[in-house]
Length: 104
Image 1: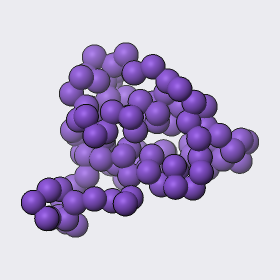
Image 2: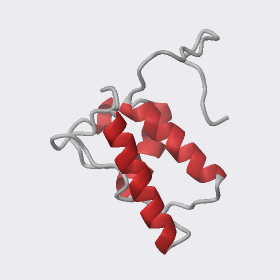
Image 3: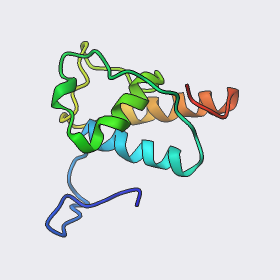
């Protein structure tokens, strides 16, 4: 239940991953590990309305918790994520986990 396919019974393991899909996966992992998220308002980024409905909760939680920042003031949900962005996200998660059990 952490990683789903792309529809039509396809998984596409060699495809690039979008920023919103990366956030969904990370959010699911954190939830399964019992990490709580405070209640956050939807991000005020100008492109938040382009986030897919299935990714809105994850994007809202990770951006609201300060774990994910935008690109040039935008979330850029359908852009491909970079290795650097994933590394920074993991670093932020580990730093937050050291200081508290719940990411707020």
